[in-house]
Every structure is written in structure tokens, then in C-alpha cells.
Length: 149
Image (cartoon, rainbow, N blue to C red):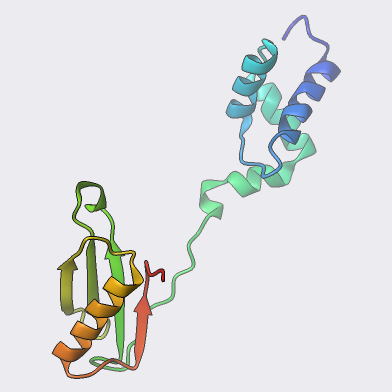
């Protein structure tokens, strides 16, 4: 860093920033990629200052508090007004994919199944029809995730 011209070092940082058009790389990653690509070691503060000067929006984009998930409260009208169905993949790796249907109004599990794959449309359609038959009818709304035909 001491033997390098500041304008030259700044251009190295800008070139590395151009290699990341999505602006996901922070000052540490930029610094390490420069070191591995060129063999030149810049300080993190220098990289951060150059990045802040030339792309302040990138810092706001990478801020952990900027990535908020929009959530809406569930307000079902009553029992069996809305069902939620979802595949649970935590045990998928060891051969136990789960698919379940829950009544949103009561939080009651209508049924839970361990199936060969919770991503197959025919399997999910069959399980849904089994739940409809067991419940004696279907709900007004159905929120189904992890479904592909």
C-alpha cells in the first residue's frame, strides 16, 4: 500500500467493483479478491473509503437491516376459511420429506404425511384430495407452497 500510487490503488478497487455488477461484495471481499488477483494488499479502510465515495448505494444495499421480509398478519374469518399447505424439507436429505395441511383459523393440523417427494404435483394433489375427503369439504382459500407440476 505504501509503494502504490493512491490513484492507481483507487482504480484497482474500482476495477474489482466493476467485476461485481450486483454489488454484493463488501470492502473485505474486495480487498481479498484484489490480493488474490493482483498480489497487492490494500487496507480495508482504504477500500471502504473508495467504495463509499464511488458507490454509496452499495453500502445501503448490503446493510443487514435493509433486507426486511414483508409480512402480513393472518386474519381468517373462521374455521376452515383458509388452509395452508406446505412441504417441509429439513428431513428431505435423509429420505423423510413431509407435506402438511394446517387450518389457519385454529392452527389445527388437518394432516401430515411422510412421502417419497413433497415436490411432485401428483403426490400433493392426491394428499390434498385425501384431506378434503377427511374434512368433508375444502376451505374457501388454500395457500399452498412447495408445489410444482
